[in-house]
Image (tube, rainbow, N blue to C red; front, side, top):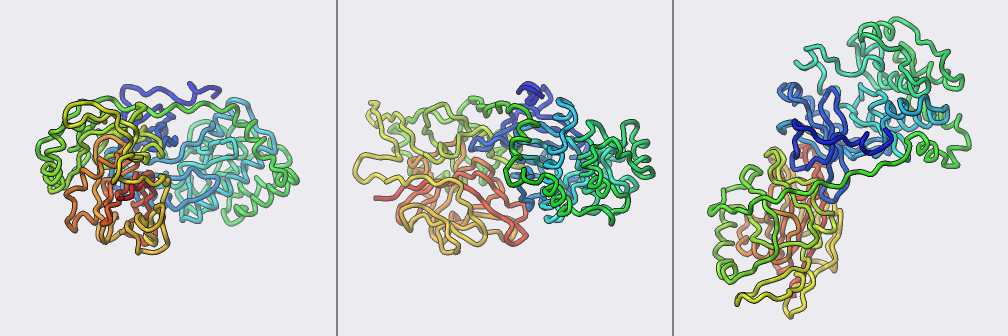
Length: 553
């Protein structure tokens, strides 16, 4: 894997262009669970999207297990894991999104350069052990640790796919003969369908390290049944391994799980053998040599330019199936819109749906794609960067009521008297069930560890919602980059109490909310990360958004 063409494969005819609003840029690979694609968050950060194959998606038992494992995986926070960002076990098809790790897998690195030197194997074992500790602390056993599930970033290894293989176990798909896990890296108790414990992952760690040192599986290749027989009934031949690794791998590969080394013992043993290299920070140098030169990640895929249409009567509640894909054009504030703003705004708000009337942002930024699955609508992977979304008010041309065109200043930096005053945008503000967002109190919006602010995240009854005691909240549909004028127009009729609580079930990365405080202040929230799958578990939900505020004058 020496260049970008080896890493990022073009999409094929049977690959979807969009998954749950994430616009796909390339194919990264495929496995027993499904295909993996490259996409981007609304802020432009690369993510890996795993789409479950139809044979598994059609199994109700799989979906239940998949959802359970996703909820557990959300709790994993480790320096050597690829964090789970988003997922939908009930989507069509089910999918999940993790941070993209720029680097080859251990399997690819060994295939390219051959066996790794002993120091690299020790760094590998220490890093993977720390990752497994974080995974086990979340109540997960990986069950499928192997060289292809260890990615080599420039600063160390990253373990991926933790716990997901459990969801696929004992489904109709596996009954057809496709085994879950890889025989060469299974533990004896796993091969005979025995009890699976964290020690099962320690055995797989030993096999993975042996592969890195030998350049081939420790128990050899061949039919799965033959390999599994060797694992269960034969002692591995460790004489081929470098002598410095044999004592540790002997303990990791003990047939009795109770006799295997603990992960903390593995880390301590590796640190001791690495000696002064640990304190000298030699790890990054080793990983740069192993991972090879960095490749350039493809840029986000721009949205297509669809026909701009708007229904005369909006449905009672918008979904991805009812919201047409819109591109924001140059602003056209005509006398017709100005004259009908109050009437149309009241009709749309009364219908429970907010549409952008127009507006634009310079620079050809990509927009949110609303042709995605209705399971997770209004997400985007190819939208503008977070700061650009929150800028809300780039210079645009305006056409006055008399039909003459004039250069209008940004709504974020107005020049006329009585115009709103823009407050510098804040990025990545996190709301949880213990804090709240203050929009009006203070010079800049901020979150505080109390529930007295203007906006709160509330998770009760059947899901999570944004709520306020006094401010009106509406969701914007169409392209990204809502301006002050967009928000003001759509908030004009949102005065009833029901606009103080907005469910988040249909919100995803890139979704925009406009908020109006009784003082006249207007805010724009652009969702970056939504973690509400475990809404029924107290303290497990959070929403991260970029925030812009225009102060009333």
